Image 1 (cartoon, rainbow, N blue to C red):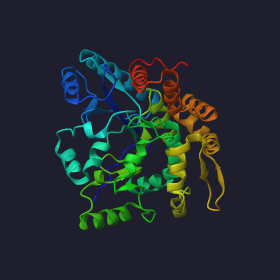
Image 2: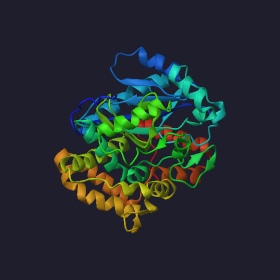
Image 3: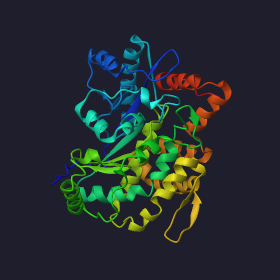
Length: 376
C-alpha cells in the first residue's frame, strides 16, 4: 500500500533534463560524470544528478510557492553549471531532443536502476536520450492528487504546445512540433492513469493489482504523462519538452499552478471519464501541429483550434494568476498563445538561415547558457 505524503497545496518544484555537448560539432558527449565531479567540488545545495545516458544531466529546484523565487534559483543553478561546463570546454542546452545524435552511440549511465531499465527495454533505453521538464504540484492528500491528475489531463495539449522544442530527430525534420514524445510512447506503461481510478483507495487497489501481476515494482515504472507522486505529496506533469530558455520552465510551472488552484478550490470541477476517449487524438494534434492543432473540446464532438482553447483557458485563469502573484507570467503565456510562438519554430528558422544542424545546436547552447541568440 502506498501512503500519500501531505504537501502544502499549490507548492511547486521543477526538474529539467539538459544536453551535454562537445564544442566541436555540438553533438552529445559522454561527460556527465566529469561534469558532476566538477559540480561536486563547489559548495552548493542544489539538486544536480545524472540521467539514463551519459549525455544528459538533470537539475531540480527546491519547493516553491512563488514562481519568481523559482526563477532566481534556476538562474543560480545555471551559473554554477556554466562555470563547471566552461572549465571542461563543454556546452549545455535545452530542447526536447538533440537534432542529430544517434541513439546507438549513447552509453547507459552506470547506476543500478538504469541498467535494469536497459536490460528490460533494450534499445528503447538508449533511444530515451530525450529531454523533458517535469512539474510537481503539492497536494494535501491522495484523493486530491487523483482528482487533480484527471483534471490536468484535459490540458495536456496546452503544455505540449507551450513547451514544444524538438522538431528534429536523428538528423531529420520530423514535421512535428515535438518529436520527443514518440520516444516516450514506445514504453508499455506510457499514457495516462486509468480513467476508472477515482480516489486514493482506488489507486492503491490498482497499484496493488499491478504489483501482484509483476508488471510494476514502484511508481517509477509508470511513464504516464501525469502521475501522482505519493512520496513527495505531489502530482507530477511529465509531458513537457525541456524549453530552450530558463524563463519558459517557470511560465509552464505558473500555468500548472493556476490550473491546480482552480481545481483544488472548487470540488465540483470533476473531469469526466469520457475525456479519455479523445485524449490520444488531442495529444497527437498538439505534438504534430502545436497551437495550430485541432482538438475535440467537448463530449458532443465539437472541435476548436488549440490556440483558441489555450486563450480561453487563460482568460478563465486570470483571477487565479492574480491571487498567486503570477500576472506577469499569465501575460507572457497569453502573448505566446496569441503569436503561436514556439521553440520549435525558432529552431527551424535557425536551420533555414544557417543550413547546419550543428549551428542550430550551437545557438541552442548559447541561448540556454547565456540567454542570447534568440533575436531574429
